[in-house]
Image 1: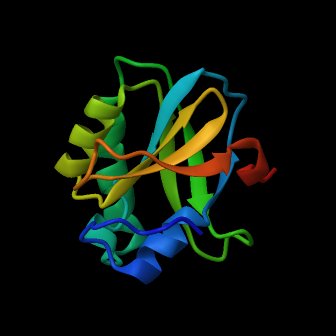
Image 2 (image 1 turned 90 degrees about the vertical axis):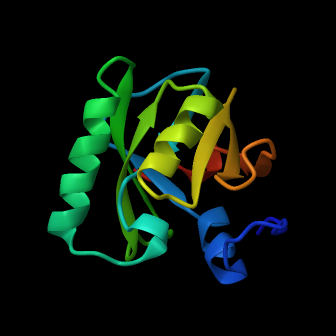
Length: 136
């Protein structure tokens, strides 16, 4: 768990974000990239159909960069959200996340995983090694 800063994100939700795991659907390597979704705006649950429509709209915004699908969830993947790993700067990723009403994004720099609240994009909360969060 990482310490919650003065974000507008509920502490239990922030804790859940900080304990997420990642399942890549294809081989992926980039020295730095964002993990972003359009599922469940502001963490309000929606139908899979609505989430897929939103994620398809997000995917259209990624057509100019290298990206792959990735599933983000709890360790057992009982809860998950379909997402994308994309070669974006933090600024562009946060802007997209805000467009799709997301609370936060993940960002990976040289194998280290960070959680960034959209309300505080200048603060990167280090979670740890991305490798330790990968599930096959």
